[in-house]
Amino acid sequence: MTEIPVIPGEAVLAAIDPRTAIEHTREAFERYGRGEWEMPAKVYLDSPPHGDFRAMPARGDGLALLKWVTSFPGNSAKGLPVVRGEVLLSDAETGEELAVIECSSVTSLRTGAAAAVSAQALAADGAGSVGIIGCGVNGAWSARCLAAAGFGPGVCADPRVDPAEALADELGWRAGDRGEAAAQDVVVTVTPGDELVLLDSDLRPGQHLAVLGADAHGKQEIDLDAIERCRLFCDEWEQASAGGELANGVDAGIVGRDDVVQFGDVLNGEEEGRRGAEEITLFDSTGLAIQDLAICKAVYERWRAGALEAPMVSL
Amino acid sequence: MTEIPVIPGEAVLAAIDPRTAIEHTREAFERYGRGEWEMPAKVYLDSPPHGDFRAMPARGDGLALLKWVTSFPGNSAKGLPVVRGEVLLSDAETGEELAVIECSSVTSLRTGAAAAVSAQALAADGAGSVGIIGCGVNGAWSARCLAAAGFGPGVCADPRVDPAEALADELGWRAGDRGEAAAQDVVVTVTPGDELVLLDSDLRPGQHLAVLGADAHGKQEIDLDAIERCRLFCDEWEQASAGGELANGVDAGIVGRDDVVQFGDVLNGEEEGRRGAEEITLFDSTGLAIQDLAICKAVYERWRAGALEAPMVSL
Image (cartoon, rainbow over all chains, first blue to last red; front, side, top):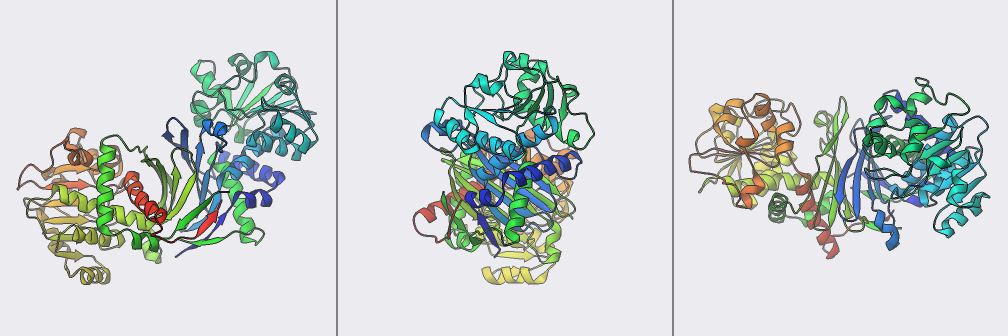
């Protein structure tokens, strides 16, 4: 029998602060960009009409990870989480099971951290103010990570007033409408992707946009005119062109492979990032299993160091 | 927080006897054949030089399953298990996590049960004797399931004497050499697939062959002349033609889609099974996530009924 820890979400969030999530997420993009970490395409299991399950594998630093996670958009209306599931961590050398880790905490940290890393690398010099459009759990973690990276203050916009105000209060920012949020230096969109929340008419020179909501085909947060005005970056081309925000541009014939830079290549100095103060940069974040691996590696190291308590189970 | 049971392998094997595994595995093939259960292609995560991890999703009867399992062939020599990992079970309607289940126990039960179901459906009238070639854990469970289905006695063959004799003793069968095993009415091959263990010259009219060892490209247990002599069945064409025993025939240009019947269609009466007493039937079992779902559904039902104890953890 193998004994492994089962690490709940609360323990993950208590052990990994936004600054640590940012460092590890940046490393994941760099190492994936250099070919040191591996990641096959995720597989979708449809569960109509509720949504889908995704199985997301990755390997790096002697660890193999599988994230099993839902995207059930209708769950919000039922008071249930949209994103839930587990991460399984194994030893890549022996195959031994190492840990089961709650997955929405990992997803929130790596999603928020990706927004912050993209702003650190791509926002204009002197960019400070933040607009958060969509203040659900991943919007809130994006705001926390941007604040931890020194960005802010910000405007929190959401059709639901309560989460926007709660997030603004927590960070000493303010709640505002969509248009106000869209006018800030760094704009993060984290909505369900079923209506446009950022238009060409909102944009102004020098902004950085981190577009996080579209993670499956058919979701769209930004109008196509806006996409045409931006310098485009993505986390991973295959995934972004198939199911990310950029897929809409690909479908419309206005975005091709040569128009988009993979973000890790910028961090590794192989591709240019921002090319001037006036450029508008857009980072399409679809969410990668290597980001989950980065967070779970940190979680597992904390547990091994005795800095995180978790119940043990036998398999 | 969600509380879920973590079910160890010993509890799985104590709760699900071979007869139950056979019934549930048969149902899985039938329901998948009728399109009631869904299964996208499994995804492989290579971990060279050790082997690979596989993420295998399936959905049916309101449950969604993900099996995360290794195939690390070199592990045997190190005294480590080749097949290990976990199954995650979720509610397909809400996405809620339901259970974590040890995976090699599930794999053994569904692999062995598939051999038995194939023999029930495809072996000739009056077929009784069994040859097991490869007496590792999945070979042993194939023997147990065939015995539970009324087949036997059998000959257990393995280059390692101890597991062959232990299995023979357990079932009241006998240990023998490869050639003796290959001469029985029902022959099951469950080897690593790195050398041929069943040749054209071994075959005789009326046999049923259940070929279980080849589960990835490049593995081969049976020579091509033998394949050409058999009526061919598989668990799932895409998987079998890409990485099963039949992939070798496909690569050699001697096996095409029209030469092979999917086994579920036989159970559902949509395709003919055995067509006469002289025919040699060959079932290529690559192992399907819907089989895992069938076993895990039974395990979860036993747990819900209070017939299986497992520690609870919070996520």
